[in-house]
Length: 247
Image 1 (cartoon, rainbow, N blue to C red):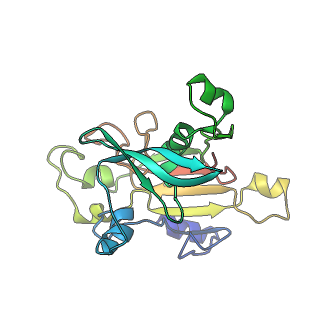
Image 2: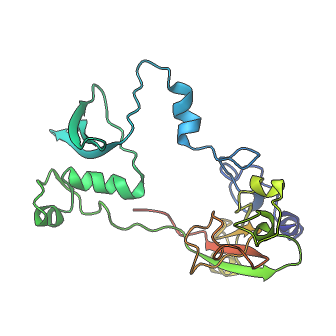
Image 3: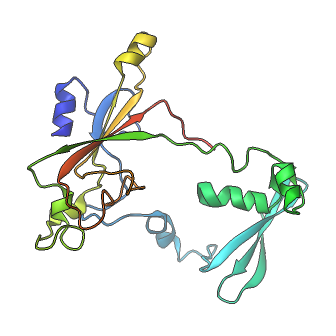
């Protein structure tokens, strides 16, 4: 119904929001199967390649430092957590750092890449004075709007212990992405400020679940309120689309 309402308001259907640009409405892109089970990086990329002779996956290994010489990263120092022993692995060609927006800057800092004064304050050798490391993290912020409804939402469809006692799980609920549909629009304020621009500046995300930000830090989760979920409502998360994720 959210998609139908958006199309009635004049938004075009966007079958792939990752590639479609401009105003439109479509299903929120997800990495999951139709039964709701998630497809993560291991399933999609590592599992099919585990038989390759040039791939070694280390479990319980924590990267602690990049080995850098003459401004080039030659390897990684890591610790095996099971026995607390330290090891080094050297690269023949390149090192790819992909540890997320928290651990990547941490690893850079432990490797001597960061603000000089901060590195010196904790006794780390300065390899590269790069003050922006670990700073300026911003992401798009949203305001939740919610409406009570008589139609069953995820709060009543998940079964115990997520839904109230006595409710039965609806198999259709487990295929939900929680944040199910997304619409991108150009606001009246944006159009007035820059009549020539057609770029959407507001993103409206629909979820069949009540969302309370004080108790729910994750917008893709079933944390709308404490379990069992009791509020039967739809939510729309309004996001300023001009906010750029950075840091």
